[in-house]
Image 1: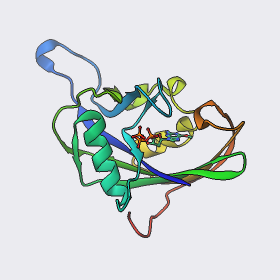
Image 2: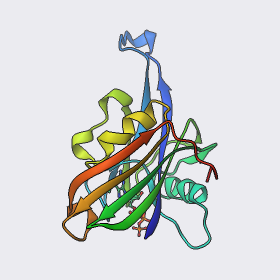
Image 3: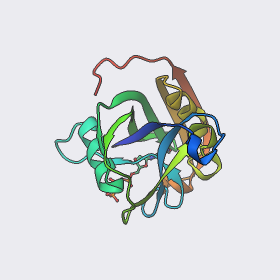
Length: 175
Ligand SMILES: COc1nc(N)nc2c1ncn2[C@H]1C[C@H](O)[C@@H](COP(=O)(O)OP(=O)(O)OP(=O)(O)O)O1
């Protein structure tokens, strides 16, 4: 089974009174538009597969740096997701969020970053499971879920079948 990570950097957006911007203050999340590989063309958080000897947290930090050039710190564990394909465990994904980072997001070969207000997340351009668990993660909750896909490899061409989801979960190892 593949072990992978996703990281959702968050920031507060405040209106600039000098420009007369009258939008409400809101949180924004840094998403990527994936440019290659699994989920190409879809929005997601920065992330990827664990390398040998790496902890999930180290992986999330490395992948966020590699994909969008952001140095994230103080990651908070927000979720554990299991994706099954035709009844077999396919990917186990650790989900993090953070408000601590240095640098400005910059595009890479793998990803185009974009700050998005959390109530405007483009779920119609994301994995089908995301609309079920990401809102809770962006609200500060914790989630654990299993999402079942059917139809054979690759996973991003399979059909989403059903799921189980728990909220307000505690993660013992805090990995
Ligand atoms: C099945 O549903 C999924 N939903 C979401 N939101 N994200 C998913 C799903 N399945 C996989 N993912 C994530 C997990 C990883 O963050 C990426 C896939 O990573 P990738 O295969 O691109 O991993 P890298 O290590 O970056 O790949 P390279 O081999 O290209 O370096 O999708």
